[in-house]
Amino acid sequence: MVHADELRDQLTDDTLVDNLLTDFDTANIDDTTKAILQFAVKVTESAHTVTAADLDHLRNFGITDETLFAIVEIVGFFCYINRLASAFGVELDDFIEGNYRNESKG
Image (cartoon, rainbow, N blue to C red; front, side, top):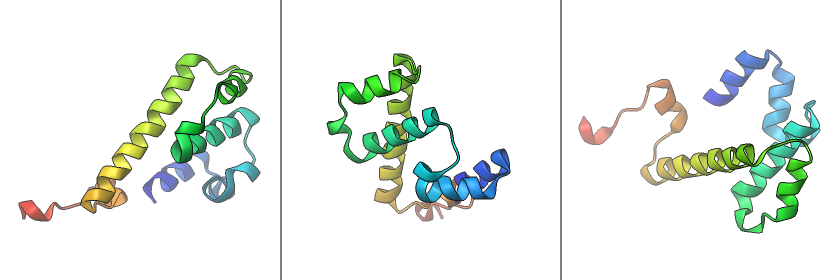
């Protein structure tokens, strides 16, 4: 996974990256980051259930409305791009690495 490899390069802590990939709730990260990730999962899996209390919970960590908007925007973009990739059968890691070849163009 390209993103995981990039994260490993940035963090230089393979255990932390593995924990983030498998169960970030148990990863050694600060509470603010954990709350953001929990919110991102909720937006991804069931955005229609997000409540004012969810937003207030993040605001209690000092997260601004501008940042909340950015979080939702980023989650939405990733959902969108993954749907496109799924619909067209594109492996995003190959595409990102430059190994994708559009068969319709030869």
